[in-house]
Amino acid sequence: MRPLSRVVLVFALAGLTACGRDYHHKTHHWPARRFYASAVSSLKAANYHHAVRLLEELEASYPYGRYAAQAEIVVAYAYYKSGESDAAIAATKRFIRLHPTDPRVAYAYYLQGLVNFNKHRSLIERAFGVNQLQGRDTTALRAALRAFEVVVKKYPHSQYAADAAERANYLTDMLARNNIAVARYYYIHGAYVATANRCKRVIEHYPRTPAVADALGLMAMAYERMGMVNLSHDTALILARNFPSSPYLKRLQRAHVLGGS
Image 1: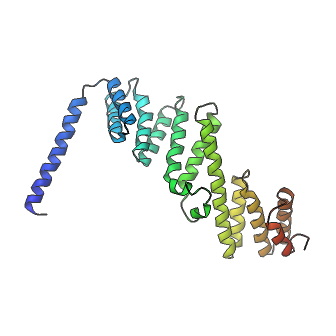
Image 2: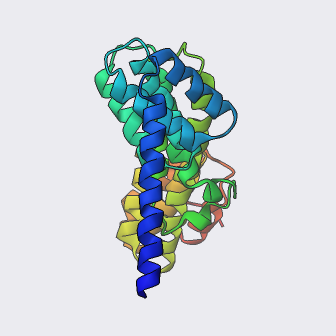
């Protein structure tokens, strides 16, 4: 860096520091109510970063005041809206840890679910193009599902329960179908043990989803390929009894796992 550029950079950094000091001096004697009102105004104006700054300063200045707990949960929302997903999740977890009996814990879990849900929004917006998830990390989606399920089970009368239930059902179906996509991949490549295990996961963890029919069909076919005749036949019978229109049944008949032509 040339000497002149260094001088310019030094003055620029000094200017930023001075601005920070001026801002702090301006708000230093604000009462908690003013911090909170200004933060809410910033949120309404979509000035999320400024709202975060005000709420953080409110927490630091009045950690035990009447606005402190509200600031802790509102800052989580401000982080979420400003695109700071990790900070938002950390803030919700902190609120839940510090205020486990607070009625706003229901919202903390709901917000936690929303943040994780939207981490993979581009995937979710493809609706049922679940094959797009194959091989991708679904950790955030599973975390979103867990958070929404907590809202539904522990806070069924909260205002967030209905939407949380809808999102949980959507994610459950999506994750189940993703597992089926992975199971099909294993089957095509001759990994029959992995196919059966993945199908078993769908049956155990997502028993109320349409993907169970696919799981039973693929599992029966995988058992047949492994020479496990009895297991294949028993699984095929369960499939026929519960899903008589499954397209897998014809394939299993052709493989002589079930009777028929």
